[in-house]
Length: 574
Ligand code: FES
Figure 1 (cartoon, protein in one colour):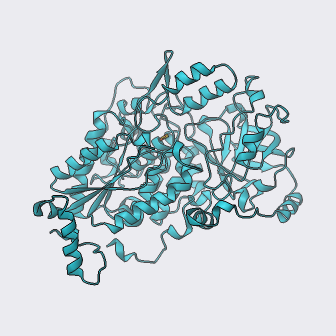
Figure 2 (cartoon, rainbow, N blue to C red; figure 1 turned 60 degrees about the horizontal axis):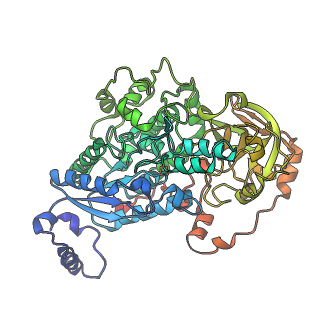
Figure 3 (cartoon, rainbow, N blue to C red; figure 1 turned 90 degrees about the vertical axis):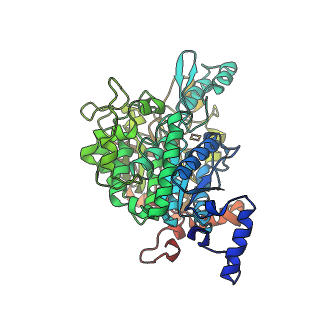
């Protein structure tokens, strides 16, 4: 039996007996001694009937296994939690850290020399990378890949940018019940992740940019043969890494690779969720992500990728245009090209191998970008002392400097109840404010930041308003929407004391968001603020752990006890 199987023996007080028993049980699966002598590559199985984005995981597992065996390793598949955006109550973000803990502990608990993590739906890749960084075993990421596009009445559709746009038209009365049902059959025409630049696509791009996945991993469609070839190659590479014992996640998640990820996040028109997840992933490796660095790069790095919701195309077109490596070639002067990758070379090697596709319009050259600035801007001011973000690439230019009257909703439930009431006092130039929807407040910081346009304004043809909150927003959404206001209202951030009728000034070019009341009044209101009593649901179990341990958005919403403790050597990582 190989050394691999002797790792982490179950504690029975007799190591030889523990090994004997392990062998007895694994033999029940019909393995030969030859098979058990090979280096072991663990493969996570995140297939779930509740996760259609991961519908191709069984196929990808087969491809990874083939690759592992081609390189002389033994693949061992094991299950972990799977999370789908639409099947996670109260919100998938509530469960991300649980998946990270589950994945980390399963990697630690079972004997393996390397691991392939297969994920994709929004929170899964961040959770898996957080886990890998903490477990510190050689790891390779295989994204499940995006869906192919949908079609309706001659129009190309993408989940879920068009889910929101077309639902907005249904709310406004321009699409009837019959047609919205028909559209519902066409928006997600295959397994795989949302095919616009939502959070899943963003995270797949960041993971490839950081060298944690093989080149071309981010954009190949879930149902394309390339996706299976990437999975096979990843399995092969993992088996090599199992023997060579390198590179480990700490060699890949570095200040340089995090810088590369921030550049890519801006250039692809990435999801605002990307900055929270990147902060959490980097935090596990002891690398701090500064919001000000993101903002500085946002001014230097233009948006180059012509993809919805910032542009016109979809992930499959990005793949056929040369994929992320080709995009990064445009950004070469801004990247650390000597950053190592899991493939064994450097980021510069991956970029050098990228294909030039004549006539493609998806990846814009640096000299003719889609937008002069990057996807995201970081705002500060008396409303957001620790920062807030706006996806400026998907916002309305006329609203980027706007002062308006606040219309305040105290919670997601309050907003849901009142937003469409005919008597709601609201006008198109007001600013909709949602609070108590942050990491602790909701809990789990749901994607409620995309407040719907009140129905009476939608019916007048209003398509965008300034909306601000301590919530998140789907990367597939669009609008002039300020998110992640930190500190959140539930811990006494200034958002907690805004009143309907106050005036708020948003100035994206100046990176400011201000509540227009004098400072004495703001301090009086803050001194009088009292926290709400704990929710009944949070007195026990995971909800209690979440409520007591979750960090704010600027710290990635990780749990405080999961961050790497500097100076503490984790002996189990060896
Ligand atoms: Fe899974 Fe969009 S719902 S990626």
